[in-house]
Amino acid sequence: MEHYQCDPVELSEKQVRDYLVHCRDVKGWNHWTLKIALTSLKFYYTHGDGTSWHIWDLAKPPRYKPEITVLTMREVRAIIGQIQLIHLRVAVSLMASCGLRVSEVVSVGPGDLSQREGHLLVRAGKGQKDRYVPLPEVLVPHLRELWKTHRNAKLLFPGGRGREMKRLRTTTTPMTIATLQRIVRLGAKEARIHKTVTPHTFRHSYATNMLEEGINVRLLADYLGHADLQATLRYLHLTPSAQKKGYSIAQRMVFI
Image 1 (tube, rainbow, N blue to C red):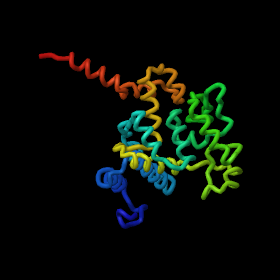
Image 2: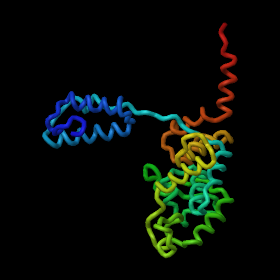
Image 3: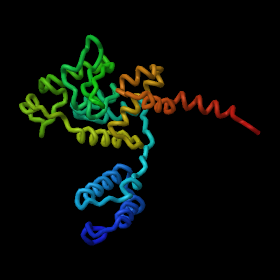
Image 4: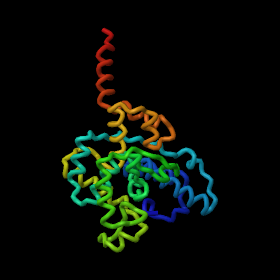
């Protein structure tokens, strides 16, 4: 309506298509934004007046796979070292040390930690599947001390406005994902890491660094919660040793 300055019901199929092309080429919308727009328009026109256009099947935007950003272990430590608030630093440390998704780390409960077995139980990860991941011993005292500051029975990282102690002890609402996203971005900036860093970057880095240290790919897939081994294999070419080996092979591929 804003683009054409008229009631959307009056638009033709070509006009809707041209609008989507404009959003892609002029506004620079990415795959996900275009997909949301296409789905919304399809719902509006299909359920509004039963319009059946070919554009709904033809205009599906190709999926864009962004380049994977990987941090070295030194860079990960540098970022975490810039986080001053203890509850945020411990949360990011756990996420980076166990290869967790940001949604998984905020949901961790005190009962999910097992120092005796040396693992962390990740409940209802992607695909609603539970899995176990190794828990570094050095993290356990920090996790325990953090829990003692609020003693919430369900959450290790409870959320609370102003972090009021009474609220933290009883709340069932975890720390927000947006909070971790913001603190990671600021930590990378303060550490002068000139890469696009998000919480998920730590997961990519965990996988790549684990492979560099020689972990079995199938075992790493279990730790990451990958149902498809191909999702894990994509990290192989990102390891420094793999890059070095590829360069060495390329030097022998001379045909002159």
